[in-house]
Length: 196
Image 1 (cartoon, rainbow, N blue to C red):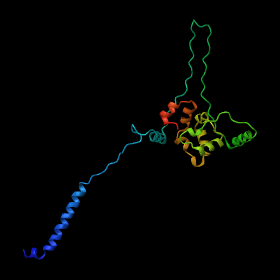
Image 2: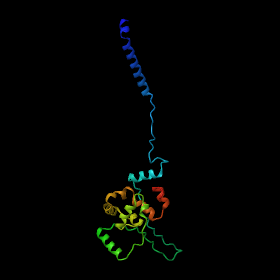
Image 3: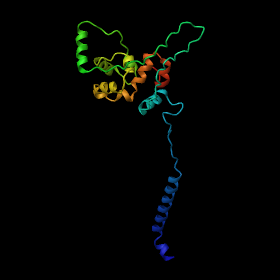
Image 4: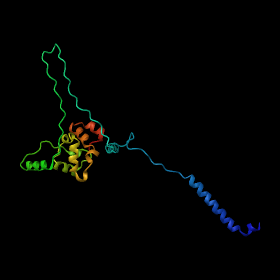
């Protein structure tokens, strides 16, 4: 007992420290944790722009079915004249111009010839005014040209884009251009979002 009477201030301080530690330990365990929304941009109801950009960035390209060839019809006794079926040919790929072609084009432009079709390439998502100007310098002025590019043409043009390299495949210009060249605004907006 003598020991307690002699050291009561120290015992009181130790008791208060223990009480404070217990309070903080129990309070820390009861602390409310905030959990954020972990929704994905590909979830249903996500904004179309974010959803479409995520799809473009994913690099997944929908396969485009080949154009069908009209089948030949068998002759019927009622029709005396048999016409051969017309063959539907796939569009020929547009080859990106070489530097020599660009020089020849520049000389032709200087002589007064102009190209008949010119589309607003900035309607393609990923193509801004600077990139549209650069494509024009390369002789690319229409959606039909871009829609007809094959892998080799994409590689040639991509090599000429400087700091914009990689955009053609990443933003899927060829598929976008197919929709725009065909005037399929509804299909374009379904796949890539609103046209601005």
